[in-house]
Length: 357
Ligand SMILES: Cc1ncc(COP(=O)(O)O)c(C=O)c1O
Image (spheres, rainbow, N blue to C red):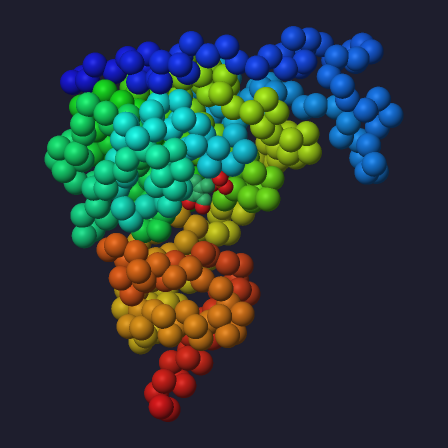
């Protein structure tokens, strides 16, 4: 290991010394009794189901179910309001505004840049190579004494590919800040998660989400796996009750339905294959990029007019044609069999229309 990672040096000094808010549910963790400590409404709620009590601030029951699934201890799990919350909190914990810096590897997920900008944190961009891999030497050269986080998305959004292990390892071993591997799409690849390497790399942070494979985007629930020292810090700076009671209840039920999640993933993977084959047959498609995610990046002759035609047919895809290294590309989520057929039929109709003109 060529780095001198020390969490205490990476954290903003005032965060290290911060006395967190102590909620009523922090101070009394029992489940029975007459609860007169949190200024709640004792009569219930205005809704048929009661939500009058504050939820568990640390989501202990969920972590107990999640830990064996991820083969990690509960104190290495942080749960957030979507994985967008830990993205924000990691920057808050480590980056002093208008001083510190983060490195992102475009084209990639937009929130790393937006969250850094919100905090007035400088962003150094090291574009991926033409084949969407990490240019390790360029990344290592971009590191400054003020660089606190390097964001790696694997499988990457919007390109869909997994980053090479050796590249991530080289960065982990040669950078003394946090390396965040965002695995929002990990369940759609057969490559193993980086969670298994957390004990080897104290500067590694892994993000996952319930929004994709679990089908729970509307709940807003994301996972962050890290050293227990860093998880403690994230718990200290989050808002006290960041996962709502209904979200916690739904997550608890969802975690018992792993077979349903696996079946949906299997279906999406089959549909990804079918959709890819159908798209490749169309003459207006230049290239379908290989995908380890639940979407395809597709290059068209004229992406904007394809997008407009599809919009007119109320088929909505994501225009990535202005994004660096994605010129001419649309990002298309894998739909159900019926949705994918409708998309292909619309694209065929567009092709025919163009031939007539
Ligand atoms: C790579 C990546 N990370 C994180 C997220 C955010 O996920 P969540 O819904 O958990 O906030 C997304 C959402 O599309 C994503 O693509």
